[in-house]
Length: 314
Image 1 (spheres, helix red, strand yellow):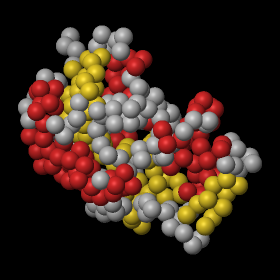
Image 2 (cartoon, one colour):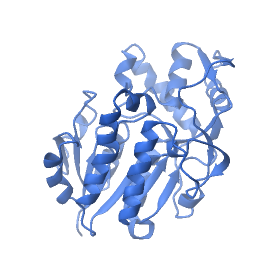
Image 3 (cartoon, rainbow, N blue to C red):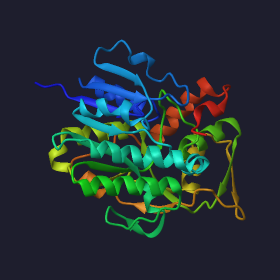
């Protein structure tokens, strides 16, 4: 039986360092191509695995990236400048990595190769209607614009799967505390206080390990799912910020929740997302919001005295 070779750009990041281990555990050969921009050592524990290869490289260097695109069966372009603040800080770099990298990969793929693209619910922006994969894009940030363009390029090519990921939570070897659930739990533990702006704004959520298993689901069912886009999130977790804060308070009884009615959040996303299409393929998540909160509460005891900037994308 052929062992598939998988290339993950940005594979040392928050999602990639979880996904890489999951794929290696399933017997795949995995090459991670990453420039380690955050000086992370999230893949050190995998270096003794003979099916793992790490290449320190920059996805904006096309000559450097090309041989790895050609020589792998499955490409997962995780390399990205993630989130509105980070993209706004350097829009040219965000465009080069979030869009131009994907364009270059697609232009150099053969039809027998497979492409699974991580995208984002951020493409939807804000909507009063329940969001499905047929809902129109309404990007509110440069980050969302770059992801919309990348997805459109892949779908026009006609060979690939795009995953519109909900807001991610949970622990990872390349930890991030700047994601909403992770951030709220961190503040609950460190400050005993949460200040909410636009507390009625809703989002959907998904555990980082469930994202890894979603990629695995796509690999195992590629022919059936090819050419499609899927929302990826917890159908029972379309929560507004107050609902999320109150759920966290169950684990931190002393937590004080304050609503600021006059301020605004930088991130103005507000939507309810349907994940029915992906669930109809046999996919189902393993982790709840509550699982994530318990996990984060335990993990933060290990990093709570460290420099929190180490665990963000800023």
